[in-house]
Image 1: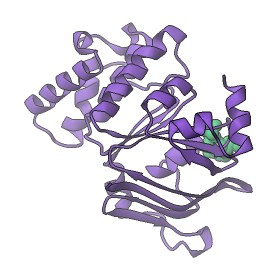
Image 2: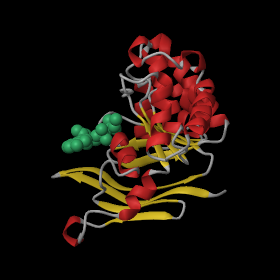
Image 3: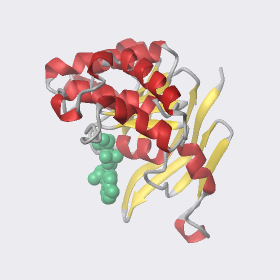
Amino acid sequence: MEPLLKIEGLSKSYHDLEVLKGVDLTVNKGEVIAIIGPSGTGKSTLLRCINFLEEPTAGIVSIGEDKVESLPQHKKQRTFHPDITKLRTKVGMVFQHFNLWPHMSVLENVMEGPTLIKKKPKAEALEQAKYLLDLVKMGDKADQYPLSLSGGQQQRVAIARALAMEPELMLFDEVTSALDPQLVGEVLEAMTNLAKKGMTMLVVTHEMRFAENVATRVIFMNEGKIAEEGTPEKVFHNPDNPATKSFLSFSK
Ligand code: ADP
Ligand code: MG
């Protein structure tokens, strides 16, 4: 097994509030990690620290060869790491609130990053966008505008758009939480297909059935720490930590 993401001693505080309290996690290529846990426990903060949307207070994040170490504030000599930019190009992220560009068609939304940032030739970006839109079953909506789509359709476009940047790792933060229940399935299906294609994924979710059926590993986060982790079978049916048991009994 080949490690892709390595997190060591990751901590994050906002002023006096210690949100992440030393998280260690290694994710191998092709793993699908479901992250579950009570609200306010640091799940989003963990994802945001992985691509440095938030700067960790301390700890090391490595993706493949690229490594960024965050030093405690008082030791910090500079706040900008050139490596952050490199590390970010390897990570795609999709959030709860799809933020597609409303003035661009679905196709343009997916092509924008590759042409503008990656300087990909237009014909190549177009071919790739069509492939990715087919992958999330949005190929027939390529010329529509985001506001004419359902939330589930928009979210699938957001997934295609993130994939167009050719990330090695995809982060999903409660991507189905804002959707009407009948639209959740189509987004989970797109994510399941992506997992089957071998994408390495970290998925913060309340969808326990998805976590159980698709994840290779489940992480239960509680109070800023990984409180339990294991196979879906283990975490859902035979958890060691009483906090896991209690959380699962409330989320049925
Ligand atoms: P989760 O995703 O598990 O619900 P979060 O990572 O969003 O938890 O938040 C963990 C804690 O950090 C919460 O108490 C939240 O209020 C706090 N928090 C998150 N972001 C910020 C911020 N930018 N400034 C201050 N506090 C924050
Ligand atoms: Mg969250």
